[in-house]
Length: 245
Image (tube, rainbow, N blue to C red):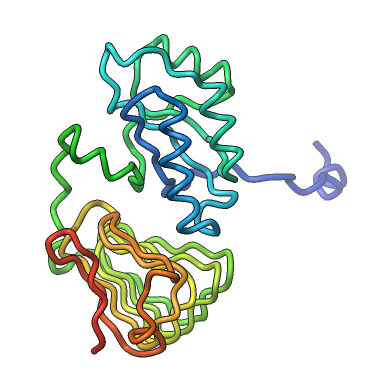
C-alpha cells in the first residue's frame, strides 16, 4: 500500500473491548407465570424507575427437575410489559437453553451480578454462602466529580467514595461500603456480593433507592425524618436500618 493510500484510509468505525457489567438477576423458583407476574408487579410498583429499561438475567438454578416447562414466550412478554429488557438466562437444562435461544436470549455463565429474587427464595431454597467481605487493603475507588444522571459506577472488590453530588438517575454500586460526601439523589447499592456488614454513609440523603446486600428501600419508604441529613444505612438482623449521624 502506498503512503497516499494509507493517508486516505478511513478511521475505524468501532472498537471491540471486554468490559464487566453488573446486571439484575431474577431467580425463578417456579414456572407459574401468573404467580411470577404478581410478585414482579409488586416489586415494580415499589420502584418503577429502578426497573424501567433495565436489562435483566433470568436465573434458572432455583428450578427443580420436576418444576415443569418454562414458558419463555410468556415470561419474556411479562418482563417486557413491566419495562424490563430480558437479556439472557443463567443455569438450567439443555432443553431450557434451546427454548431460551428461541426467544433470542443469551446463555450466560456464572460470572454475573446482583440478585433480585423474591423474598420467598430464601424460605424455599437455601442460598449459597456469600463471598467473604473485602479485607483491609482491598481496592478503593474515589470519585471527585459529580455523578450525572444515567451514570453507573461500580467499585468491584472494595469501597466507593464520592466527594461530590450524585444526581437523580445515577447509580453507585460497591462490593464494600459506599461513602457520599454530598447530596445523594440517585441510587446506592452496597454489599453487591452479599456482604451484610457493608454500610452506606452520606451527608445529605435524598436517594431514590438504597440497598445493602440486596435488602433495599425506595424513596417512598424512607422516613422523612432521616431525609436531607447525614445518615448511615446498614443491616440489622436482615432489616435495613437508616440512622442519623
